[in-house]
Image (cartoon, rainbow, N blue to C red; front, top):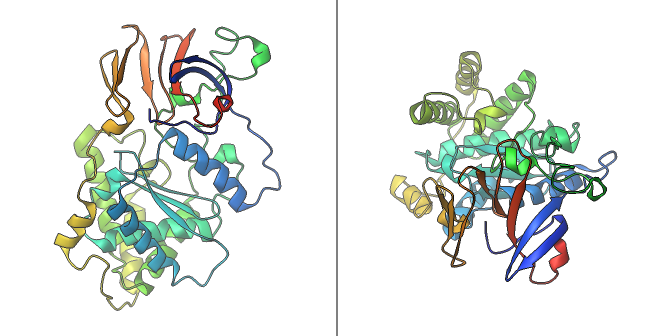
Length: 335
C-alpha cells in the first residue's frame, strides 16, 4: 500500500489518515470505445493494483529505447507510453492505444540493450496490429475485472452492488487473455524487424525469452503464475521460428543508448529485487509500512493481501474481508 489511492468508488470509514474501504468498480460500457479509451481505463487499473515503479534513470532509459523503436514505425496512429510496473516477476505486456509495460523483474534479467529492444518491439507490434483491441476490457484483463461474488451479501448488503473481490484473488498480477498463435508469430516477426530497423540485433529476442524461461524454472521449479509466459507462451516451435526468422533479417548496428554493459548496469542500478518496501511488507500477520510510519496486525488465521492502493486480510472462505487504504487528500469520497 502506498500513500495515495485513486479511482475506486464505494464506502469508507475514516480511521485517522486511513480508510477501511469496501470498494466497488464501475465496469462501464465497452462497445464503441476507441483503443485509446480502453487502454487508458485499463492503465488506471494497472497503476492502482500493480503500481508504476518510479526510478528516474531507469524509467527514462526504457522510454528512450521505446521511442527509438517508435521512431522507425510507419504506423503513427498511436502515441506510445512506456513504463515500469512494480512487479518482481519477469513480465511484459501492452494495452490497446499504446501503453507498454516492462516489470522491474524483467529488467533485472537483461544482459544487453538489444534484448530489451526485442521485447519492447514485440509489445509495440501487439498495439499496432491491434491484437487485443477486438476484445472487450474483460478479455484484456480477464482475471482483474471478473467478480467472483463470494463476499457479496455476506459482508455488505446487496444494494451496495458488487464488492470488488478481484484484487484478493489476483493481487499484483495482470491476467491477459492469451494471444493466438498467429498473433504471437506476427508480433515476433514484425517486432524483430522493427528492432533491426532501429539498429538492434533481432536475434536478441530469442536470447531474452530463453533467459526468462530459465529464470522461471530456476526460481520456482515450475512456470510462475504471473509472468511473461501467461500471455506469451514460449514453445520449442516458436523459439525455432524466431531464430530462423531473425537470420533472414539484414540489419546494421547503431550506437546503443547504453554504450556498453557497464553503462547498461548503471541505467538499471538501484532496482529493487523481490519485494519493494515502499509498498509495505508483511511479516506473518503483521504489516509494516516504513514510509508512512505505521504497522497493523491482522488475525493470524486470515489471508493477507497488499497492493499499491490497499492492504487487508480475508477469511479462508471469504466470509469477511478488511481492506485499509489512504483517504484521498482532495476528496475522501473517492473511496
